[in-house]
Image (cartoon, rainbow, N blue to C red):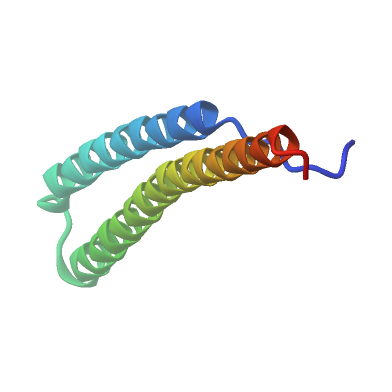
Length: 110
């Protein structure tokens, strides 16, 4: 493995889109499960009903937190892709300016 970090910004951006898709599917699957739980809650009474209601709220909170984390991860992948592109563009411009300056100096006999 070389010493240089090589990142393909397009692949990083696509990875962000894939994570978004997984986040959407995750949320849809958990929402469906929460609906099924809500449908069955009417069959519970007393402490078992209260315990199931409490667990359901906990699961909904967990789902929201995991979904948020996935969305943040996707955003960070896209942000990283943009930063790598900017770094490459800026470095390219610096190299081109240095080459032009060197060529000018050489043509002037410096």
